[in-house]
Length: 197
Image (cartoon, rainbow, N blue to C red; front, side, top):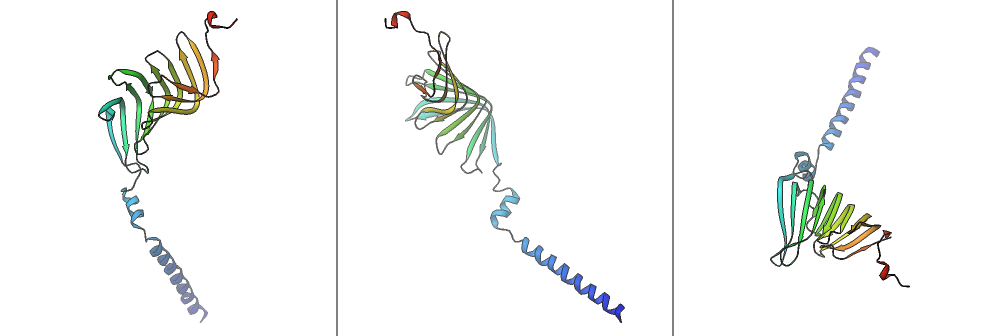
């Protein structure tokens, strides 16, 4: 009689065990529409539009203010907020009202947030104005709406004839004709006639 009870007992435990697994499996298969879209790739942040050798004109009131040249342009519409990455190098020419180049910015990469009007340029960032003054830093934010540059990173400014200034942080206008540096250090040449006696 013990031999008959044991198989029934094992069968009942196995049936309860597999029913529990089936029940848990059925419950865990209920996904939201968003989860299904993520699985199918419809909401993926890496849905990208790519282009190479791109030229973009930034204008204000029908006047071109800047021209951006990019080697690789990658638009990410799925991100929140959406952004565009520029890779493999970029160049921006800032123009005056006459359409002449006032300053030039170069860098290895950038990220454009169009809604906020911010462009974050990174890696070997260099800005040179028409006076030959040069800014070097590793990250710079260009606010298109204010038409200004900002950074809280280390900066180096070289002005003719070989004067070098260092600082932490910078605020400047787009043509780089005006700038303010935080914690300024460096050597500045002064004409002896300008030194008070």
